[in-house]
Image (cartoon, rainbow, N blue to C red; front, side, top):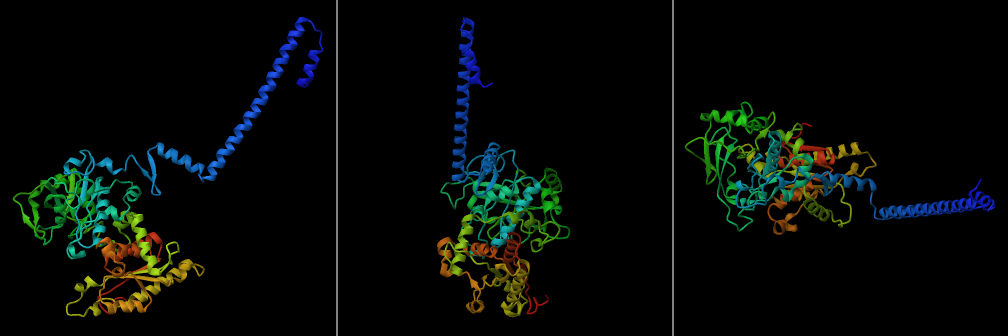
Length: 507
């Protein structure tokens, strides 16, 4: 029976006192129930409208609910989103591994419960890059925090007069630290430099290992960092177990063992076989009276370029721990990347919003290789001809076509960008006649705008953007460019051998 019918029967019943009270009570109950029902219905409608409005708002501002929930969850766990990557804020912040901002003293900024390692640099920029990757890998193996030295204009490179440049100016340090899940520091985060500050810093002693089997070696590297950071460095020759057997190249495992308390203790227990010395003037060693124990808290090396896993020159091969474990993760900053893109757009004469056409990059290393040629031979006898690079270019183009198929733009890449250290204008004229593009740093006024570091930096980034790459054998500049194209872009690579006219004619 419906509530309305039940109500009619009630009001038509005998009108005694009890029935009147009962009927009146039921009427109130029925009216109250009806009011609650209307209230609930109105509330549900209002809630649905509100939810619809919220969803519409989120859609209108393109917020992904799943992404929003994920971000809130990650932030609650101490993980933040920055520059396109998630970073673990509670373990990778560089500030957790120093006492405070850079000051006048190194010792005052090192944490007592953290072990550090650093190494100094020499030679050309790419060799210094390799050394930095070696340092990071060594730090991870020995469970230390690496401190990266600034890149230096060593010897004849860049005229030897350009100011040092920090690793983080060129490469994306937060991304690298995140990808490796390892903290990384730079010297500029620990101590002020006289080159960038007017503050007088404290003169401090560093006792380091020298990765050399003899203190009489003509060059002892690391002297360039002494002046800007006000250090006085003394070196002690590394023990035999730090080197590969019967070789003067250092061993990753040997150095990692040396950085452990047991390895250090063992080395110093045989100190009669070690020698300590201090570099002076041109870097030649000066003997000191007794063997000095290198610091264990702030471990340091004169250089670690000549370092490998099982053999020397591993960076020239596919089995390459330096590149495969560290270097592949070292990406350029977005600023440097976009600066190189600007150069490429001008090379191809395309607008800032236009697509950069695919191209094959070629690096032809010549200038300082002339000194490696057989005495008495003409440089053209020794150095590879342009035709050798053209032949290798054809192989890269053929491999691209086979890999991507006839419908892909990568199957017919005709554009080429060449970088080289060659200064002969007649040689460059031959490049132009082939229709190959070049980076004209004189016309771009690269040095005037950015400094002497930037021609090499921009060349490196441009080479890394090739759909394929042709390089020069035994050139570290080429080796790293080829590795980037292969692993970052999935592109085919080739090397041009040199040393005689037919050096590159076997395949």
